[in-house]
Length: 227
Image 1 (cartoon, one colour):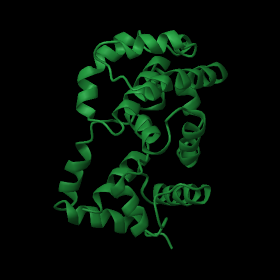
Image 2 (spheres, rainbow, N blue to C red; image 1 turned 180 degrees about the vertical axis):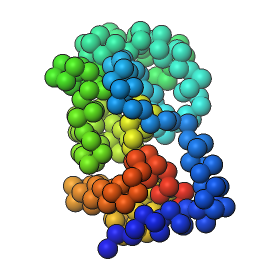
Image 3 (cartoon, rainbow, N blue to C red; image 1 turned 30 degrees about the vertical axis):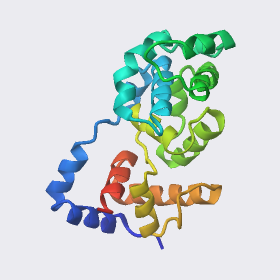
């Protein structure tokens, strides 16, 4: 049976000097969860921009991408999804010669794929944020699968990190979170199958009912519970 979240919380507190020490670590997270109203106000181009940032940071020095980010914004002309959904070979050639950005053709092409994806959900729901808000916490793992299957290079932690940075309460299956999920007998390995995702969602539902915590807080406590 899945471990109660009280046990996870107790273990995290013991690792970090008690409840006050744990709260201090939780308060240090750089990304704050947004309210639904705040999320609705985020324009679609910011979702495409942040998706691009997390894709380029994957397997790379995060700080180096952050330092170069003004050059990315300039090269992609502000990341308008409608414009980049029509990304051409000429665009790619220009980007591969642009100063200041990382010239990785596969990652550069992902901007076009994700622009088309985001443009599609915006047409059907009004905006990317409005589409995301159709997935309550009880369907979080379904949203993660949607990013993986419909987006370009938005599987695994990349899509989850995009959601966290955009202020969506979210679980990130980092190495430490996966270890905690295994310790809690939710999964036996990093979740990858439909069955694994269902098991993680069921655990999240139980833990939210038990604690009233949002998914970001649950995720952070899970990570801090392993050391």
